Image: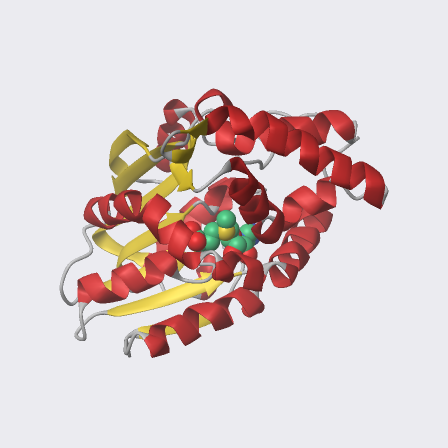
Length: 283
Ligand SMILES: C[S@@+](CC[C@H](N)C(=O)[O-])C[C@H]1O[C@@H](n2cnc3c(N)ncnc32)[C@H](O)[C@@H]1O
């Protein structure tokens, strides 16, 4: 089957429209799980008091809000995403936190050339680039928006082997729904696992001084059942992958996933393996 990037993007947008509230409802988990990586991403992006920051694939805005706090009232953050529904959550969260320096804009991360050139000091993207069919277009768009010397930083998943909390469910679903793995170069959760790929893509887009780090960021929840609930409620792509199975079969798959994830239940609760890659680069 050939990969249709237009169709892929249409369905990605719909998934995040449909699961925007689900992702937002899990915001406290997202920030406890991704918080340390987010702060490191902001460090590598050089975001500081007064910076103007572009957030690409901002979702419900967890990292946008961290950026708003970091840059303070003299700085600004523009949160962009393909899904307007998820951006509404970001705007609401900023307002509720009393932050006035966030604005949002519905914008495909591969269409950043619509923004004025050299207009941001820093750019960030947290677990977003992996969903882009044309990553190179996104990276060169980010490069276009940054001022000379501005920094881009991103957080993404490392390998399937080090991310059992997500790779186990994905591989069970692929197996049960008889789906092939994504071909090399196609979007998917582990498409940026190899630091060499990220470094190559950033360099090709014109960035230099590339830094790539990994960080251990286990997903901590009371039990494997809670992790299943998190993934069921917030990852629309998993439901789409299950779309060819009937309701009973789908329920059976989720049970199998819970069984598999229960290997990560410990005396201190569920500790789902997750390794993240954090990369930064200069325009
Ligand atoms: C896993 S969520 C991450 C959201 C947020 N960055 C976070 O870490 O909480 C992925 C986000 O990527 C967005 N996305 C996917 N493809 C996109 C594209 N081509 N352009 C912009 N956003 C996109 C989705 O709408 C979704 O909000």
